Image (cartoon, rainbow, N blue to C red):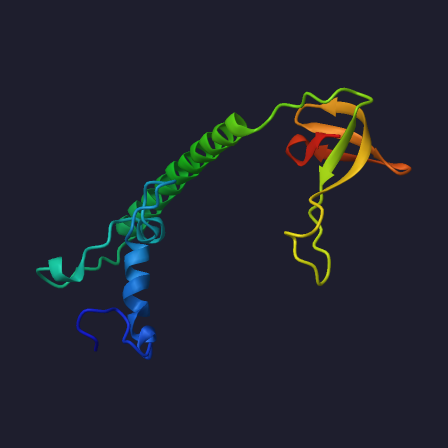
Length: 161
């Protein structure tokens, strides 16, 4: 065992630390749902092994099972609500920095090219392709004419030509 490090200099003992890393992860509060993964699975907080004064008692009765089931259902419901709330906050933050479509119908635009060309660095490739003609503006999307077909593109992928 290496005294001041988690892994030895030659990195040969990393696998010995996996159970500890898993325990830390499972007992750390998730900021989005404000519960630990351990709580979401078992319905109660984990006790740190050094904090145990006596062996944990396990109850095998119907009342305990029903209480645990209720706790799990309520914690999953709270977690679901927290995740939806977190998702809405993320969307608000994203939309705050997102541009609104100011493209006019008939205007020409360029589209961000997301395809990776084989054997070429993205840094040296063209980032935008086009120009294409705007046919319609729908909420955060722009409908463009691409050859004979039309394509709906999110406004964040479009810039004026």
